[in-house]
Image 1 (tube, helix red, strand yellow):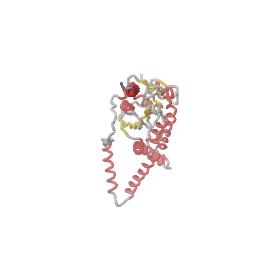
Image 2 (cartoon, rainbow, N blue to C red):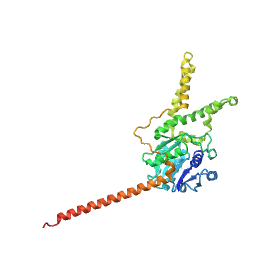
Image 3 (cartoon, one colour):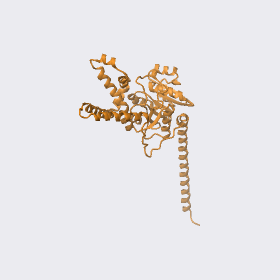
Image 4 (cartoon, rainbow, N blue to C red):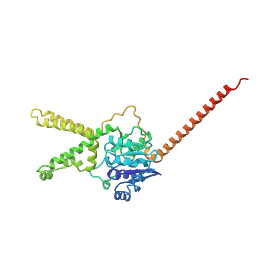
Amino acid sequence: MGKLTIVGLGLIGGSMGMALRRAEPENTEVVGYDRDQEVMIRAHKAGVIDAIAPSLDQAVKDATLVIVCTPIVSMRKVFQEMGPHLMKGAVVTDTASTKTEVMRWADEYLPKTAYFVGGHPMAGKEKQGLHNSDDALFDERPYVIVPSVDAAPGAVAAVVGLAEAIGARPLYMDADEHDSYAAAISHLPLLTSVALFNLVQGSSAWPELAGMAGPGFRDLTRLASGEPEMSHDIFLTNRANVLHWLDRYIGELQKLADMIDSREDNESLYKTLTVTQIERDRFIDKLPERETVKNMELPSSSDAFLTMMTGTLVQQRAKELTTFLEDQNRDREEEERIRRRRDEVEDLQKPSE
């Protein structure tokens, strides 16, 4: 039986466990670990995981696949602690909202005998914790796959298969690309949600404003109810990209302010509002096509996850055996070449009759 380990049993880790149980991967034991023992016990009792581990090293020992779902800044220490205990050929992935720093930590602390493939499911809720877990959290959501430079194709296919098994849509990016785009599409909305709520709540008329607040204000400030630790980690590990997009957002707000302020040009404001409505409706109706990276061979993953718990390990062992046999053949060929050369030299040294 293959062993899959989830490290961190909050909203994402708990939802991952529930989605995996729904997928029913064959011959797989889902083991959970969290620094909060009560969370582990609740997850086990709720059927989110099959078993709990008393320590991180025991959690990852003999695991074919390890999914790290901890807060971002905690991952560095997690990688450092679990690295020596990973079995040869293990696949490690994560669910962090930023990737550049995480990829660097993985390269620094994880052994070269394991394969790291970065991941980021573009799904979540403003309320965190195991009790908010949902087996449908990832359904039809993008799941960004960020392979390390030395990740084996089989390891990448395993993480792609994992994304598909939990109902998500895999999407390939490199770490820098991911962090820049995530700053625009995910981290900037979080900032604007916080700013808008603080602006209105800080007014002396807050009681009256709160009484007037409808769905628009609630929707736009929903992200401000998110876990502060997670938000803080995002901004610390993606500072430059967030500031870049924040500057551009301020520029867009200034353009709108100038249009509203202009008493001579009412057409520009109307045109902007109209074009924006059309483009957003088009976005909601159908996502624009993303150009495939040229010469990038994407791994087949239709059955990757359901077979990887035994298949990846078998492939790894087969590769090791093949390498061993090839080395043996090379040694035998070298020995044979030396023997023939020795015989040839001896023949030359024999006295002629």
